[in-house]
Image (cartoon, rainbow, N blue to C red; front, side):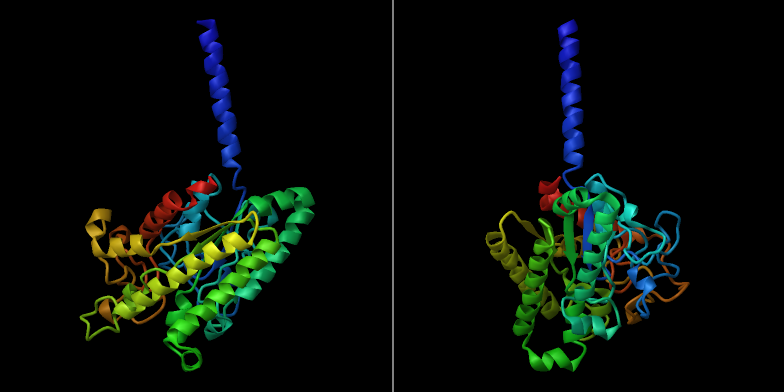
Length: 350
């Protein structure tokens, strides 16, 4: 009986040790991207594209708007928690946080940005090259705070998440004549893929070894786009969804190419397209009731990117809606998408 008890103790201690080791496999989450993963950086810059007002954040801890374009958390918050880290990833420019907070997670994302600098110029938001500059600054702060060895461990072990691209098409290519007069849609996709590839290489040379490249959602199904599809009965715009599928194929190809080219990199493609579309086509399976109109929208006439300030028509139960505003999912939808990506792609980093 005594030996059995000792064996049980040893087994328990071993399991605890393994749990601790596996919990520290990813010491931090580092995020680049657009409004899908912005946690409030745009609050700190001179842009009209902000969500620092009610009803945003009403289901977030504390019930206050944070700058996240949702009623609650965004996918990277859920991914951070699933990796055993904090339940939310703070915005780098938020003055209420410091380097000790950012050591386990930080987002440089800016709503309205894209791969293309011309996209970030549309609404005067943080371009991708500037997000990279902030990342270099962050690394320097980590070294000063924790020392070179520890900082290197964090950077090498951190999961770097990229989520952008939708704005390049919807807020730039299909809205303004500049890029569409320069490139065909296929050429523009290739132009963006070139930027994405260079960005990943720069991250790699700065020490990043674990990188998730996020794909596009079925962007033709965003309420903002469906409102314009009057001739199609306000259904999803098939052309936009096809472009998202094409671009996702090229992003996946990029991960394959760079995985061969960059020694020691763990580069994965995280595709939200199919789970997102499945929620829209079979909402009842996920407990949703409304798919084409947003919770804080004003019905099929909603044409704005964001909620109206203190909109009296905001729905009472956001969990029944896939979309919070005309461009962004609810917290519940974000949770479902992030769980899917976590279980099917990112689980290897646990």
